[in-house]
Image (cartoon, rainbow, N blue to C red; front, side):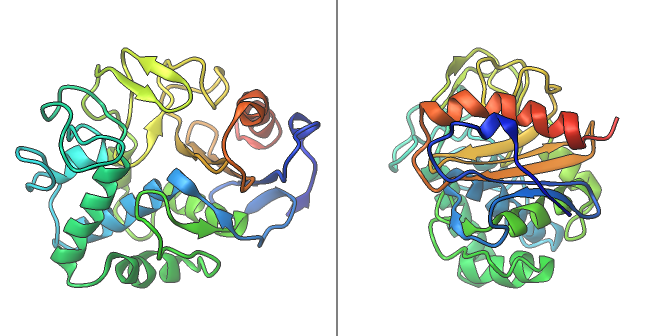
Length: 272
C-alpha cells in the first residue's frame, strides 16, 4: 500500500482522507486509514447491500410491495417510490419522477427488518460488515444516512462491489445497471437532470454534468456522495474503487476538488 498525497486536494481547507483499491488490495491512502467519520448518504450503498443479501436468501423480493401504495422494494432502492427527501407522504405517483429520498431508504430498511426478523442494524452487522471484516463501521444510525466508517472499511466494501462475495455477481450487475431510465430528477447539490440515472442503491454517472465525478468517467460508473463531504465510487471499466472522507458538510470546496481528484485517482491507479 502506498502512502501518498493527491495534488487535487491542495488548498482543501478540511481533512481530506482518500483511499484507492483494486479488486485485491488497497493501492494508496492519503491520511489516517482507520479514522472513523460520518458517511452521510454513502450509507445508502451499504444499506442496499444488506437488502441484496436478504434477497439472495429468499427473504425479500425486489418486486414485493414496500413503502407507499403501488411501490416495491425496487422502487425504494432506485428512488422512484414517490416519497420525498424526508417525510411520509408521497410527492408523486410511483415511477413518475426520480425523487431522491432518505425517507425511502429508512422505510426500506424497516421492511427488510420485518422480513428477516432482526433490527436492521443487527442484520447489517451479522450479514454484511462483520463477514467483510469492516470492524470500524457503525451502522446503528439511520439506514439512509447515519453510518460511520473509515477509509479502510470503505475500501473493503469497494472490493466487495468489484468482486462480490456476499451476493451473486448477477445481482451486483443489476444494482449497477440503470433502473427506470429516462426519469427526471435532482442530484442534491448539483441540480435537475432530464435523465437522472440511478441503479439500486448506487448513483450512476450517466451524462450528468456538472457532477461530483469527473466528466471523463464512463456513464456506468457507480457510487454515491454524502452531505458530510464523503464519496465512494466504483469504476469497473478500470477495475478500481476509491473513497473520500472529510467529516464536514458538503460545500463548494468539495465541488471544486472532487472532479479533479477523481480524475487523478484513475489516472494514477486505474487499470487500462
